[in-house]
Image 1 (cartoon, rainbow, N blue to C red):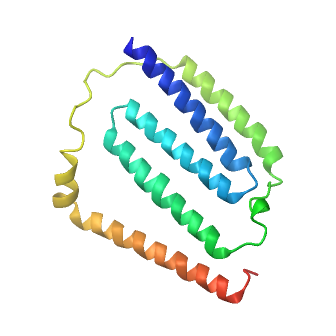
Image 2 (image 1 turned 45 degrees about the vertical axis):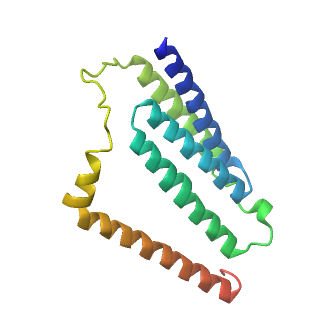
Length: 172
C-alpha cells in the first residue's frame, strides 16, 4: 500500500512542478514568475524526499528556493521599474517554442513508455548525511570555501552592477 501512496505523491508533485514551471514562463509579472519558481523548486525538493534524499531536498529548498529566488527578487526591487505588471513581456518566439516543446514532450513520453525499468538491487541507506559532513569539511574544505567566496563575489558584483544602473537612472 506504500507504493500507491508514493505514486500518488509523485503524480501530484510532478503536476505541481509542471504547472508552476508553465506559470513561470507565461506570467507577465516578473515577481509572480519568481514566486512560482519557488513553488517549482519546492516541488523538486518533494521529489527528492520521495527518493529518500533528505539532505539534497534540504539543500534544494535552502539554496534554490531560498537564496537564488531572493537574489532575483532583490535584483528586481533594486532596478525599480515603473510598470512592474508588464515586466516580463511575451516573447515573439513563443509561437515557435510551444510546438517544439510539445513535440519534445511527446518524444520523451514515448521513450519513457518504451524503456525497460529495472529496480536497483541495493536498499537506500538510512544515514545519508552523516558520511557527507566529513567529506565536505575535511577532505574537500578548500573547494567548499572557494565556492562560498565565489558566490559572495558574484553577489557583490551583481549589486555593484545594479547600483551603477540605478545611479544612471536607466539601463540604456
